[in-house]
Length: 337
Length: 276
Ligand code: SF4
Ligand code: SF4
Ligand code: SF4
Ligand code: SF4
Image 1 (cartoon, chains in turn blue, green):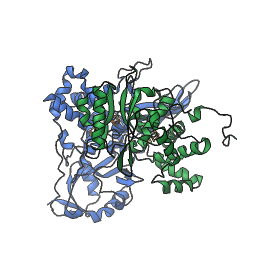
Image 2 (cartoon, rainbow over the protein chains, first blue to last red; image 1 turned 45 degrees about the horizontal axis):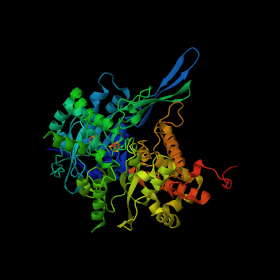
Image 3 (cartoon, rainbow over the protein chains, first blue to last red; image 1 turned 60 degrees about the horizontal axis):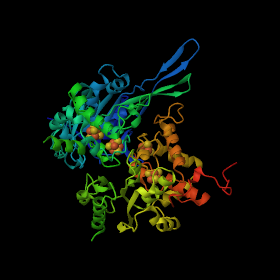
Image 4 (cartoon, each protein chain N blue to C red; image 1 turned 30 degrees about the vertical axis):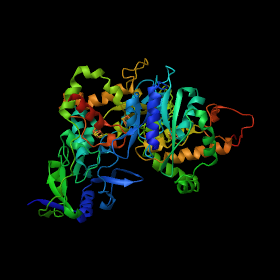
């Protein structure tokens, strides 16, 4: 016997989670944008969208975050550390690509230095993922060897049932079981037929791409210039990528007092690798685009045995000049044949 | 022959005769309704060019890509009237020599494509004058009026809600033909004039700086508005500032390649209504 969560019980579940002190967060469409937001009622959730415009990483790695306040005195430097607010949270209705992306970034944030901010939020958050039953033309989880029901990173996986009535529940982790024990009694012991998963065609040959990227001869290939000529070097594809994780430190204030913040940064920006001397080792947009691809599909897998991409498709969906990693990897697949 | 066929032929001729070294146009995009910038160097590739109502990008920004014009050779480019105005401004601001630019002009009126006659910027002066006299009323007129009718507090709240969405991706800047500065003021850190952090205050600062720097220079091509990944209605700011310079200085940006930049020039009879 499997468990079923009925949609019309969701408000009761939310009340139980609230009563247990959890913030409930989910995809919300408001003010002409869809993103993860704290909710009070199930009605605020937008289950109609395939994927929110903004990613799940916003919840773990916000675009700007204060780290500490400093005051430089004559004798000493005083600092006051800021940490994330420390609320227990449950995210309801994330998608497998976004959630896999969090699992992809875990080893990165825990590699030589354990990122306090990332892991504090990770351990305080339960993620309930809903498998995808529809996809758009940009979705490409399958090209990354993931699937519309990939479990990576999820604590609970829900499979939508016929007629929008609810979801089949798969408890994947201890944390997920704990959160769902809070709604014991609201779940039905029944089985049902889950809706068929979204059909997501494979768009490129990942292994062939990796091989091509690993070949040192291709580093200086003219291909990089051709493919990136129209790239305008904005931060859209990195900031809206759930796995992109680069950041910059900025001190806000004057010489003696201020706040040090951790802000998103992007390898697409000319300033990203600019040295104090004025020399820039990645002085052209093509070198920057190559870095983005190399990092995701060559260096990152080399280090962590994972691709730094979960196939959400946002980099193509949102690029102002219709670029994106899909086209590049499709072209590389052709080159490698 | 369709306009697209005529224009492919013209592009092929320009390349085959050696008059231009490259054509900057539009090609097919990743979906049937998307068009993307396409750079063509051989007449054989002219068949890849598309011209239709979906070609909405203002491609003129690519003209000032580093090194493109430095060999003095000519470049062909597909432009809508706004793009032609951008070329005029770039010329007026000494960023390019208009004689190097061969314009393949087109317009989209009520969803249908129209060819524009001419190839040098001066060939389009009367068209641009007409545009000044008949500034189209944007679909958002109702929203603009609503915002104008707000109290300062309400208007502040409206923009606060919009700017709090900004992620400082700078797509609005990167896509804009007028944002060619080698180092944008927000990228300066000695001293740091503008907060780099993308909190609401920093986002306000960024969008205000941009609105002022684009006043009298923006041609309302809509590029930034379409590029913004979080859907901030930047067109409303552009429209307001364009109206402002039109009312105060009778300035319609990009009228000619010798037009004086309105906020960087001085006339004895300039109105001083805003100087306290
Ligand atoms: S690929 Fe697109 S989104 Fe990414 S930096 Fe280039 S223009 Fe911006
Ligand atoms: S690289 Fe593109 S498709 Fe891959 S996770 Fe990032 S935004 Fe999504
Ligand atoms: S500010 Fe926006 S609308 Fe104006 S010229 Fe630049 S991209 Fe076009
Ligand atoms: S494009 Fe939009 S989100 Fe990006 S910096 Fe400009 S206003 Fe902000």
